[in-house]
Length: 313
Figure (spheres, rainbow, N blue to C red):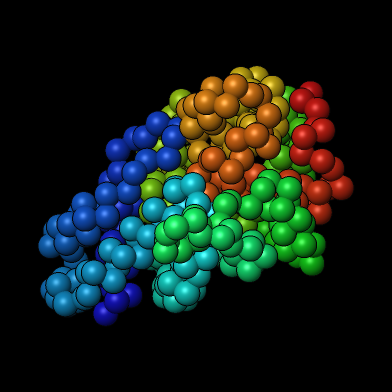
């Protein structure tokens, strides 16, 4: 019964979100569940509608709210709390054709929860403030600490099976767009090179482009979604990365902006009066704090190259 709700919820959200800016949109959990209810009434058989009515909406809302709050909040260690819920939902999504696109999206993010758990274990809590009984709140791990964790995590990983087919073609496309070919490995971090991958927030394809970003880069979403076609999606992702690098002059900042939006990155740079990623890293959204060192570690592992030393062509 819970699986049926997930199916309905994801079907309802997959194509109904409005076009967003490049910054991560807020997830209206109540609205998504209401949309799922309406979708079931309009499109599905009575048994599915009954399942939707009978399900524990509170548990679904809790998971989605926590996912949004923890990944888009700025405290990395809280992300560990999502691990059990994500692993419980993944096999449900993976076991049915209609939700495998969402399983691909979630699978590529499972190691965020593992990494957050490891970071939590090695981060000593500070003493509570003097004269209070408040529980201690450990600071975010530094960028250097996250780099160490991600290098260790990705070191034993073989190439994703799909990468063997796509990487040579994608590298040629990135080179044609004036972007270092090593950056095609963003597709491993975003989707595991699964072109079907789709997020509940509306991003799609190997490179997880949002609708508004894709349109701005010249992709068509109808009648066929070009985000799910490797060649046009790669051209668009490379163009976007080139623009971000031209704006920030630094690949770490460009990769961070690819994940959380250039507006978010620029605000933090302005706030701290810097052009250095490491200076703002612990103040970015939690997902971005893990995304950048994960991309770095993947590129180092796959190519023996350093992200910050890549040269635009």
